[in-house]
Image 1 (tube, rainbow, N blue to C red):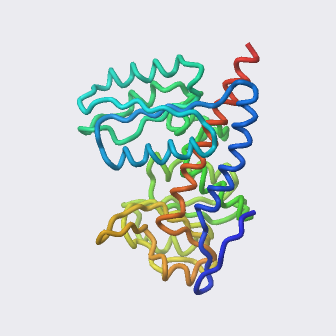
Image 2: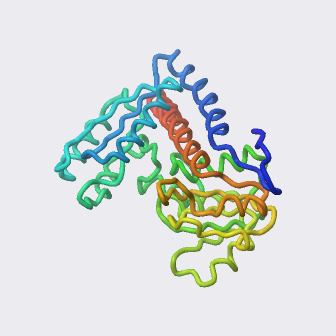
Image 3: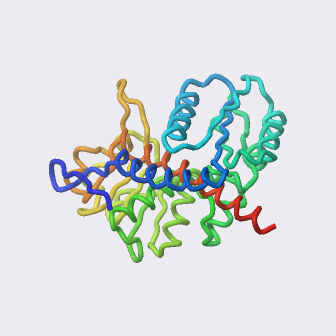
Amino acid sequence: MSEVPPLSGTGMIIDGKALASEMEAETKVRVDELAALGRRPGLATIIVGENPASAMYVRIKHSACDRVGIRSENVNLPEGTGIDEIVETIRGLNERDDVNGILLQLPLPGGLDPSPAMAAIDPAKDVDGFHPMNMGSLLAGAERLVPCTPKGIIWALERLGVDLKGKEAVIVGHSNVVGKPLAAMMLNRNATVTVCHVFTKDLAAHTRKAEVLVVAAGVPGLIKADMVKPGAYVFDVGINRVEGKTVGDVEFDEVLKVAAAVTPVPGGVGPLTVSILMSQTVKAAEMQMKTRSNR
């Protein structure tokens, strides 16, 4: 279990970078085991256009691949690429045995609907966990390849010794990327889960009950100290730019005085998400190798 360094007040910082390093160390061992069998895992990313933020996120993922020993490649498609060409690119990667994971970097330019492309990814290579088959498996209680941010939060809670069974868990935000899959994962662990969103009446009445509070609303400073139950574990998924600084959805300094532990922004959930992506790429490679050996 990771040691979480204490800070001012009663709370502690959940050091996402330290936890991510632990996950990467474990992943590297698994990579080396596969490489020794001639099956080094491979991740292919696809980026469409020249979005600087998307390019930065892809670089971060490829750097993580380098650290753990995963072979990686990037397919950069021009700005005007249509959905049919994106789907054909994905189908080509589906057919390659040396590509175990496929990741389509979102958003697509021009408001292009990514749904057909996401559905074209082989579910066994869907390391982002967004394919309808993988999401359906998650809802049915079988966690194969799942969305990385929710998995990172669950893994961090387990690493910190927090048992979700019977806990009051509140999620602010009901996106397909974080809120919905995280709710399913928490239910799979027998938490009592409340999901809040923009239409929720009296948000604070819900968040004050949370023993585990996850905020993924994209609203800077949404959660104040008086909205947090003393002793809660708070995970801030928000990434917002305010006056040139990156801030989360939680008023960090004040909430830290009330909560048992809080993730910072940056340096909290973000590194965990990337480390889980690496782990899932290896998991995909392991599952594919098992499938081939059973044929």
